[in-house]
Length: 355
Image (cartoon, helix red, strand yellow):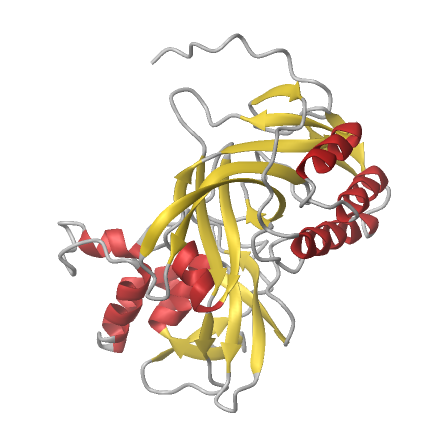
């Protein structure tokens, strides 16, 4: 189909690579529903991220913005009261312009959700477990790198990369979500954070298993069903199933704390988001307009609620590609999983660029 939009103006110096943008606009009206505590927490963490990068700049559709200006503008957001909608909007409008990320001709913005799984892990291998691996030293030098199939077949064995051991379904949940918590038999927790990927595009294991060529399941399974199904298979079949997705995620481990995004910023439920850094600058604030599912204690959807809230680009993901594509982090535990697994809505994303 032909693109019926007006011609795009010439790119400005410092425009985000690959970005297709409209604007500048006034900051859109919001009904920020995620609370002042999470807003201040996420904004301050992002400001600290830029203070550690003083002397650098970030490319935006409005031009290059110095790190010190990014930090100052995020500190400003941290001090605002999002419950006062009119005052909140007035204050933001004095410091920011908004640019809308466009998804491309014939497409619409898409918003999904993710969460921090809490999975059982072990210091030593047990029957029916697979390893959670650390980032290999040769990841940046060997190209192309090993596929997931080669890794599950033992391509990295003997290097001492094994952090912990867990069930196949739990490893898949962790790799899809990008970070989470491991719970040891004594009840203590470790944070398992995204360290790197092997460079291959994500492919759905559930969809692959249901493909007529594979036909290992009668239909595409939801994440909870898929995890249970994998764990019911012999371990060698589990490894073959995991290998259907060529993408493989490596992790770092630390005691306690919160899961960190690919920026290293600790994620904040309802505020942190994964985006495509080829389109959306990392470490930026934006307004996300969408709707979220409302679920009851059993995880059943009871309705939907519109929202327009400030979010922060703290993370990226192998399946998060293109403009106006957002994966919103909902936090940890079962409640976050219930909403995150069911979040799949259209949305619009407005990058907040300091004036």
